[in-house]
Image 1 (tube, one colour):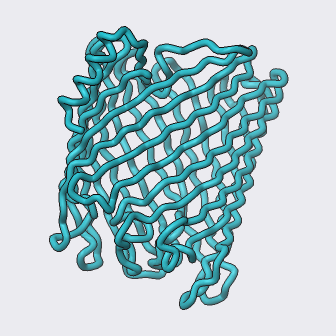
Image 2: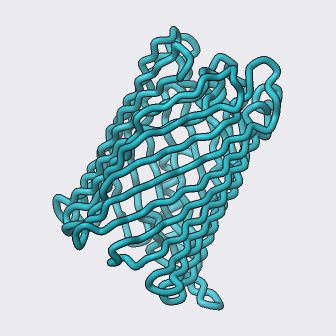
Length: 401
């Protein structure tokens, strides 16, 4: 579907008087009230983009394509005082006009609840059921295993819970976190089955208020990782991660909020064939409001992630900065740049990735918005044929249903 077809669809809906909505920052501008205090917020996004390197290859195998994506969604929400509940479902159907083997249909279903039993006791729960795909040239296909004839598809079941004891203004406050991930690949099983895994995480954070809007942070996080299927050749990647960090969080002014944490992460393997490792880890997040309509976000993080078949694990170092500015009630823009280093531990591979993007959003009517985005990304690797450059131009329309 080209951009003229999308615009025609918007015009037809408007002429018919069908109610439409726009989603901004994941919040709907129009809600439909249902029974039992529930509101429904349906929406649809139609986008078309041109990608000049759909497989993220070096000079050999570079291929371009236009990609059209249709993404209908619905959000159900309910609120009782300070307690709120949401259910979200999004379907993303994409068509590669020059590579039909890469067509995809993704499903995202999410449940969230927030309960405040009193000023001291709060509970947040979430459940995600995701049926997604890995774009060819990423994930498992970005390794020595090689690229499949179709994208690798997987299913994620993710549970998260967070309990907080202590009021927002209390001198001391405790937060306990727990999570469970069940990840299973659903196609190309000859190579993907060995990456099925389960992850169980537990963590605790203590906040100690040293100033009215500033607190010290002491955090400990543990994650157990279990791979379900035995690999045929290499040793299993089962093990655990332990992270201990100390830092400070603040919300001192209307203009600035943030958190800074630094500490140590330990990566341990159950088998003696793989070497344990540890490294300095950190987390930085700062929001700086230049004006009420102009905000800069800066983030940086060092953390481990699971390997795609190269090395024992990946040690990531990330720095990201973005600037969002509302030029008027209708027109807004976002500029972003990020730098990432991926070190494949116990492997020669070391990658540097750079990403730039510029986006403009125009609120055509209260119920219709248009967007355009340009992004440029590169990877510089010390492994032959792992470098790439990728340009994407995207046009989108957001309307209601």
